[in-house]
Length: 117
Length: 112
Image 1 (cartoon, chains in turn cyan, green):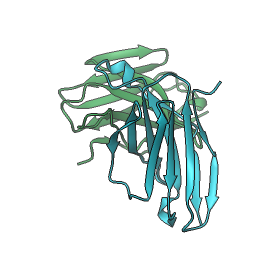
Image 2 (image 1 turned 90 degrees about the vertical axis):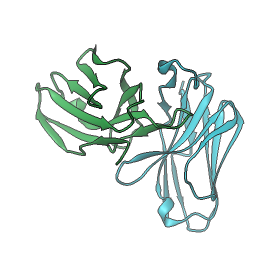
Image 3 (image 1 turned 30 degrees about the vertical axis):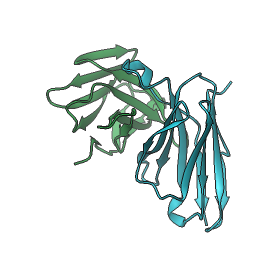
Image 4 (image 1 turned 180 degrees about the vertical axis):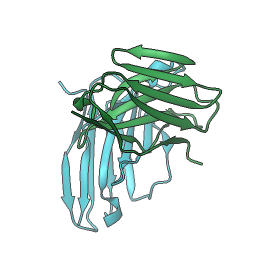
């Protein structure tokens, strides 16, 4: 029974296409994230949502648009894919943003390896 | 200056030895620190968290935090080949919203 699940696991597509990655968590968490891990394994936050509200929006091209229909789901849509978008995209969740530090632990999905040709 | 810095390694240790992984951070206000382990082709997995100065032990793992010197370390005792992975240090960023900032990770290789 996977806690944070994302689909697809692999995504191979041509430059210029539009694609989506879906993420769902069954942990009852309030906060969800998208992280990007590049070829050098550097993990960097892209977006964060808390109870469907956008909290963090890093300097990411506006071709990337997150959508949170409810607090258990956070999807990522990417328009006009470019070669540089090739990376592994991780969805993650944490309990919430309250002061208790233990509630900020991240739980990651298995990742989506995106290859743009 | 990067917010969280780690030596990328690889760090090679013989089986049974102690592996010592280090991390420094720039934000003096950071209160919580996390160590994640990532096997090749897998997602990061939380192995330790530490919030107070000093040591915190969990099985073969010990996290050490020194806020005055702004470093956090992870010791792995009796290292096993199965410990070979990339270890990521993470600390909260400066902004609201639990923006966890990760270091570049240290590759650990335990040789049998």
